[in-house]
Picture 1 (cartoon, chains in turn green, purple):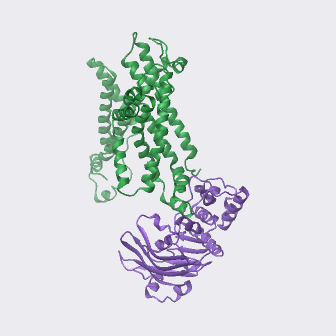
Picture 2 (cartoon, chains in turn cyan, blue):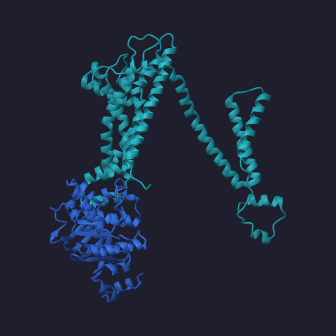
Picture 3 (cartoon, one colour):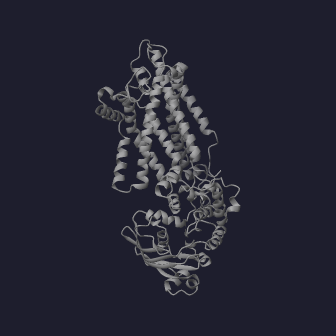
Length: 368
Length: 259
């Protein structure tokens, strides 16, 4: 029993005798009644509001900060007086952790709310069927940008997933030495590459191969995204593969199954759900990339379904362009930008759901 | 089925460390041979050298000969994958494949090796293997449930069915009952008695009563100190080992006087 609790007891009762001290390790202790925290929270905010009225200032942020601070202090003091020091500190920690959680949630919810509110204005059939060809202010759509994003991201996924997965398989199943350590280090370094560097790399690579006139195309954009995506795929797949218990590999070897078939039929299926969610996260990471695609894929107002010839607009670049170089009046451009942001979020969400579906379909069958 | 195994001057290294020294032994077909001994004495290591599972561990190296019906398993021309098709293994922890149903687990050895087999033939193998593992009656109505839905003892019998489905010559068991309760252990021990009709069975066990109950021959391994190699002290009929051992070390161990 903590000292402060003992002191607490002493304030209310005469000094305990030896016999009482013997039994002071009692399992029961004073507890705050239920809903005390809630009551104190309401009270704190009421006081904060009153304070605002008296001083004549107001504002939601001010109210929230004062109310929360007041609550933290009062709750701690009340808990300390009734329950003692140890439970009060425990309660304070709980309050702070909850606070951090709420603070982290605020931008997320506000972002989704704002994007929905602004993005729904132009969330119509035109937006998904028309390009910006010949559009001066109102109307038009982002069909060309949506198409571009889907093509570029699909291409980079098709290139990155096999390379990343095979690298991870090498690292977990085959590599045990200097080479695999070097690859791990390189992958770690690549994870931190700024996306603009990846864009410059892919662009200059294709300038060398096809020349300046043709270098800016969807495929160049896809390659720059690959540079960003591969390390993510390697990292997550490596982690998932190394989680597969060795006993399963041994069980398979003991049946006279070759190493490669063991990897394909036992190890990968067991790790599949994790690998899939890793891939989805990697796609979500690159689908919103703007900077490298500005350099590599460029910007046009019309549909270009061919990733190997001509510039290709992607959604993030489209959004960037609508905001940075709007026409007059500006509002239709801003509306299109918001809807573009909303569509991006929706695409990522659909990918996530798809990933979850695939994971659930193939994940290890557990007891039910 | 069932082949004879002969170990000649078997030395096993993990990197620079000599783990097992100079083991000579003759394991008879259609019998049960038990390896006993304290932890770390190398009995599992010797067992794993019998189907070349040892080399899955990085750094492990084998000197000497393991003859399976007079073919040296460590000859350069020998393919470890083929060895393991003839020498099956059951592990300490039941390890059914978690992505597979009971049926798929039993047939795993056939399907993973891409062997073509008619449906009726597969069903036959499935029933025969599960019956030989004394599991058929318990699971015949739920063959499509996941293998992991079974109890620990059932899972272990499923693993035995999986190992026998590919009809190996030899069945190695690495402490197959140490994770099981006494009733499941009894079921597995009964099963071992039936399996020896068809297979050469080698079992590593910590449980001396188990060795006495199930085996015809027993090998006692020990280690003389930390960092020293494990070695085979005595190899004889199980009855002799437990009633009238030649070596003092063996007697001390089986009577419980071992350090």
